[in-house]
Amino acid sequence: MQCCESINCLDKGMICIPETELPRVVVVGGGFAGLNVIKGLKNLPLQVVLIDRNNFHQFLPLLYQVATSGIEPDNIVFPYRKLFEKYRNVVFRMAEVTHMDTAHNKLSTNIGVVHYDYLVLACGSKTNFFGNTDFENFGSGLNSVTDALDIRSRLLQNLEKAAVTCIEDEKRELSSVAIVGGGATGVEIAGALAEFKRYILPKDYPELKSVEMKIYLIEATGRLLQAMPEKLSEKTLHYLSRMNVDVLLNTSVNSFDGKKVVLAGEKSLSATTFIWTAGVKGDIVKGLPSESIGRQNRILTDDFGRISTLNNVFAIGDNAFIKTHTNPHGHPMIAQPAIQQGKTLATNLMKMIRKQPLIPFQYKNKGSMATIGKKKAVASIQGFAFSGKKAWFIWSFIHLVSLIGFRNKIMVAINWIWSYFTYDKGNRVIIRRYKQEVLKEGKILE
Ligand SMILES: Cc1cc2nc3c(=O)[nH]c(=O)nc-3n(C[C@H](O)[C@H](O)[C@H](O)COP(=O)(O)OP(=O)(O)OC[C@H]3O[C@@H](n4cnc5c(N)ncnc54)[C@H](O)[C@@H]3O)c2cc1C
Image (cartoon, rainbow, N blue to C red; front, side):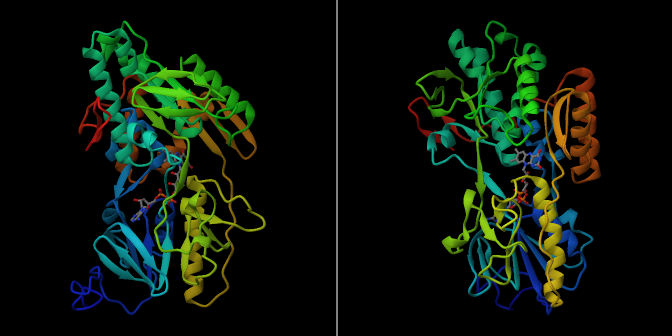
């Protein structure tokens, strides 16, 4: 078998991929959506090419624990080559897709061009800073393992700086954290940091005993966890307040300069670590006509996940906005729609190849949940609302079984059991320094 699309593939700028007579499905992105399409196509008579900018799948729901030193990053990722070692029809290429040319069925990447018969766009989402470059430059979003490690480094570096200054105000400013966005991610980080402040800080940083580390959770609307029933929002507020998190509702943030967070109404607060969890938008590849892009920068599709003007291009997961009369607002940007859309698309791709009628996507809402801390969580499942210990056990079980890799499940379980009994967390190490050091003059350095 010839290794590449063409003997002179390198001259022609092609990615080296085994030649095949079978239809080729190119999947861009190996998140929840992409993985489930590929699983559904395992060893079927087509060639599947997975392209991802990373060589690993990331389990985003536990990023906040990496950011707050609860668990290690390699416990929530899994390498694609290992994942697909028993798939005879899957080829993985690590590359960044930069452009698509749907007229000629080809994709451009940073390592060359690839042709497709069917294209699946499953590129997920990225942090939406709403055009505010200061939030982006001086603060951090949380959408990848890299972001989580940046937050961890930044937090720990700031605490190290706070430990060596003698000025009390500076100590407080350097140890304080502002989290913007009261959705599940903001709530979970705030809860984890509150536990860090209570159980870790006094032991690791005795130099900071004289000041209080402040944790601010700032939300523009009147309640936390908008997607959940109101009584669970109230319960969450109650938990966080008891854990000494300063929750500021109906408060929007105007600016951040690396030290001072200016709020609407000209009030301000001091915090050097600034975490932005107030929005995401589709991370889409260039080359689609503008009329195919809908709300939240997501790709508009029919209820088969297909871009209506293109017969062989599909979008699923956070990337997609499946707009139908029964679903005018799109599905939530969470794991279940991505998983379910991936499974449905795998079935439909085979049906398309066999020239059978396609099945429309139907979302089964399995509920939502968020954890606030040890034995504290909220969950809304099939119309039932839980909180406290019961919700926390459900949350822990579901997240553990959803992790990819037996070793990862065991490692995370051991970490959680260890923390449960000792109130300790993972190792608080700065493996690599925070990527951007903000200099006094305001310059940003890599
Ligand atoms: C911090 C955080 C916590 C979350 N917690 C929960 C939770 O508790 N429960 C829940 O249900 N949902 C949660 N979500 C949302 C959930 O993780 C997403 O909805 C889900 O991951 C979407 O799956 P996806 O496959 O569409 O995208 P992703 O999982 O984001 O995967 C996209 C993939 O595409 C790759 N990619 C992107 N662009 C390119 C490109 N140009 N070239 C090559 N590769 C590319 C990326 O590397 C990535 O591997 C959370 C999200 C975040 C960020």
